Length: 428
Image (cartoon, rainbow, N blue to C red; front, side, top):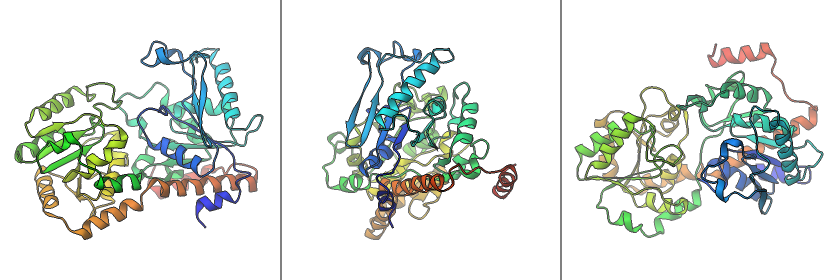
């Protein structure tokens, strides 16, 4: 039985889902938006919230257009919480707890669960642990969607919040095994893996759309990269490839810097290399594009490249690039770096390590046009759609809720069992 059908058997008794995310609903579209959208489309009552604003938000870019009192938007069974200027969180102060309690009451009302604890809370960031504690849901899920502990600037108190959230969670979900391995406590051995995915139909149909004018003005062959331009990219590799093949046109599309809000890559050395890349005559930066236009740009490249760094240590080494699946869905050849998540698709993606291997791999990609290869890439993308991922997530939620209903308590791993699991996983 499909998970969506399994869940519908208990549609009357399904608890509402409250999804906590640092990403605004109308901001850059991320996987957490996709989970909220698809779960709501399947009939789950979903509340998407970024929590109340805090004193840190006063005077920020969005403060001037924020109403004094918040509200919510509703699309079917999806409720998007819209915070207002009041009440404000005063983190670390006595006034903070009442604001969190007020927000928990608002969320319960949106979830249709006034006075009840039958709620599934899904937190995408440990910063929401105080919100979860105020809400007191019967079920708690921590979705580790980035190796946050490996970001350049880890927020104060992050590690302690993550440790407590992992301990509180009934279920821990991670993108990849390398990402799960940095979780504290029992997280690394408890984590279930749910990689990134693609809006398959949207990207598969992109080939039939006309080539965007600014891309059409660039000569072929076009070697494209669509995604955030950050310290995760191997700019030295890009420089060497671009200089070695001056007739290739390297195209970059996406926001510069992690948050898309500055023209800085986020590291002075990388900034200088990015400027050197942009100065080359065969490199074209077309800036960030609206999400709905991205598939057409990918579909009209000759090769799509995933230029990630593989040396050293960084958050990108442990992730699951969404662009991998999107590139495969448009059917064009893909050349990528040897990240763990990309290496799983060796044979579908041409993986290169050295600059010379990158040159040879792109040469092969430009010469290949086999319909069989195109079909294989599309088939892999189809099996990695967001609908497929939500099938899995939905089945896990149903399983978690049913286990609580049958036992009346959380499944707790005792110290002896946890030690044995760590030994089996090769962890101290």
